[in-house]
Amino acid sequence: MKTVHVLYENADWLPPLTEALASRGLDVVEHFIDGGSIDISSPPPEGIFLNRMSPSSHTRGHQAGVVFMGEYLAWLESWGRRVINGSEAFALEVSKVRQHAVLQSAAILTPKTIAVIGLEAMRDAARSLTPPFITKHNQGGKGLGVQLFSSHAALDATLDAGGYDNSPDSVNLLQQYIEPSEPFITRVEIVDGEFLYALRSSTEGGFELCPADACSIEDAFCPVGTQADSGKFGIRHDVTADDPLVKRLIALCRSHRIDVAGIEFVEDAHGNRYVYDINGTTNFNSAVEAAHGFHGMGAIADLCVRELDGLGAAAAR
Image 1 (cartoon, rainbow, N blue to C red):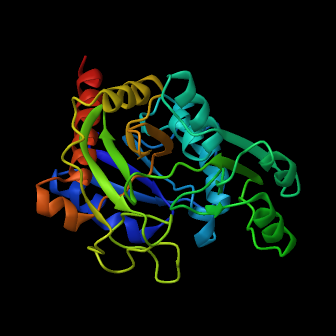
Image 2: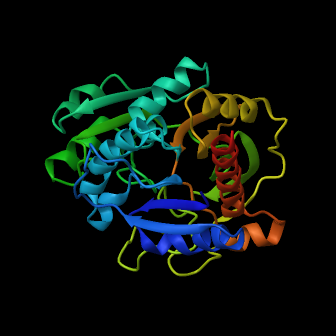
């Protein structure tokens, strides 16, 4: 009953999490997910499951794992296994279209967004947006596919030159560009319905932002590299648990069974805050956390302890 099954595809992100779990006396079983087979008629192992599959997995050659994970989670849940960031959360994790829909339904301000299937369809669809606008992948992560266009002609030229890489699910977004009042975005970290902190992420070097301590060396889209403190990230002390937007984001997580999330917004010159991304496989920067007394992976480990205690109590009844 003390076992946490960690479902993952990027080993470089595991150490801070597994160390936090081990420090709480939990047994950790790691499951590398990149395709495989499922004996649907047989029960999964006992314990709880923690989903760490990232929508950016295709950049490391693991797109099959994204597809497999959707089926794997359904199997686990059919047998009554507790999955942290289970199938409902994962469906949102890998689809910005779905994210936008749930944000809108919760009356949370979002940029105007158009979903497009097929790169050629982007030309006509873009005409309904007033430049500047951005493109992005539906299944993204770390800002993949994000490009800023100042005109429709600039998009046409990029498409003509083959300069836009298709989203791995072939769904791409055209989105109203929100010019920030200052060159940063804000990421609200939430675990188990509790606000941890708000991370300020500089956009001065581009849109591709990942706060993880370590990314694979060949992954050019991760600005952190092997350095834990890149200078891009810091804490926003003015965004707290009492912030009305934070409260709405927490309510959203509870409504859609999102146990762990890093939710991003950008603030314009008029103080409007546009939410545009929900990250379920959130990573934390240990240097920033250490400087301010936070421990995101510790909060996830504590959630695992609570869930396991709940299983133990239920079994004893």
